[in-house]
Length: 76
Image (tube, rainbow, N blue to C red):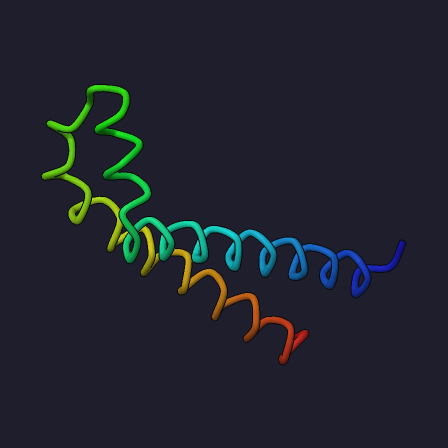
């Protein structure tokens, strides 16, 4: 396996993780999925902390996705 093939494989994996993480974080930020789930299991006291955790998580995963796209564009 060549170095460029290994690098391409790592970039694809990084892109996949970034996209999946961003989609999950966005889904939890913009829909009441976590509100319903936490309320159903009796952990609704944690709802005040969701914005503090979810918005930075979304930013991080979007950053990972952009980094992977940048690495895919410029393989050096």
